[in-house]
Amino acid sequence: MDTLPTGKTILLVEDDNDLAALIELHLKILNHHVVRGQSCADATTLAAQHKIDLWVLDRGLPDGDGLSLCQMLRKNDDWTPVLMLTARDSELERVDGLEAGVDDYITKPFSVLEFQARVRNVLRRHQHREGPSNNELNGALETPLQFGALTISPQQHDVAIDRESISLTATEFSLLHFLAQRPGRVYSKTELLEHVWQTPYEGYQHTVCSTINRLRSKLRQRGQNCIQTVWGVGYKFDPLTTRH
Image (cartoon, rainbow, N blue to C red; front, side, top):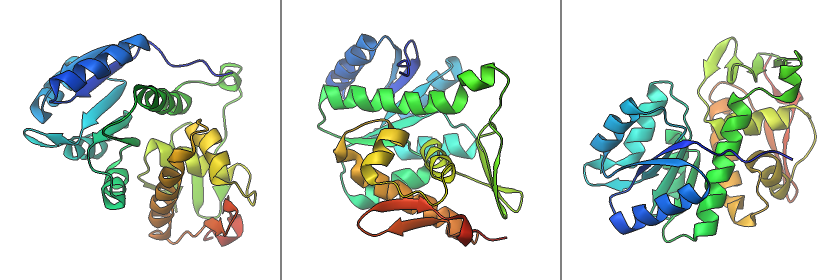
C-alpha cells in the first residue's frame, strides 16, 4: 500500500484568520509544515522564501483572485499542486479553475475530514508523478507510449503531438496516462476515482467529468479524439482514433 505523503511544506493563503487557523491545525495533524499568508502579495513573497510542495489558495483574496496566482505558476512552468478553496460552487467556476491548472477544488463550508482527504490525494498524485517508483529504482524506467502522432512520456511528464508539447495539469496527465496504458479498456467514474484520484468518495464524480472534458478539449484542439465516452459505462482510450 502507498505511504501517505508527510512532512511537506504547504503554503496556505486565506484571509479569514479563524478558518486559516483551523486549516493550519489540521494540516499539522497530518505532519505538514504550514506557511501562511493573507493576500496574493503575501503568497508571492512566501513562495520565494520557501520550497512549496502544495498551495492551498482561497479564491477570493483582498488584492486579487487566487486563480490568477495559479495561472502565474503554470505560465512559469511551475506544476506545484494547487488546492483551491472557494465559496463558489458553479460548474463554470470549476471549469475556470481546471483551465487555469488547479488540481482540485473544495467548496466552503467543508468538513475537516474531506479537506484532509483532498490534501492527501493531491499530494499523493503529485508524489507519483515526481518521485521514482520501485521499478525505476531497479533501473527499469517507464518508456513513452506512442500512438501515431501522440506521445505520452511519463518520466518527463510530457504529452506531445507531432513532437510539440501540450500543457496538461498533473491530474489531466495522470488521467490520460492511466487510460492509455490499457487502450480500449472502459473505466467507470468510480474506477477512475480509485485509480487516478485515489479516493472512493463518489462526490468527486463531477470532478471526473470536468477533467475528462478539459483533457478531451485540449486533445481535440490538436486533432486528437482518443478519449471516448461509452454511454452508461464510462470512458476509454481508443488508439484507433489517434491521428497518424
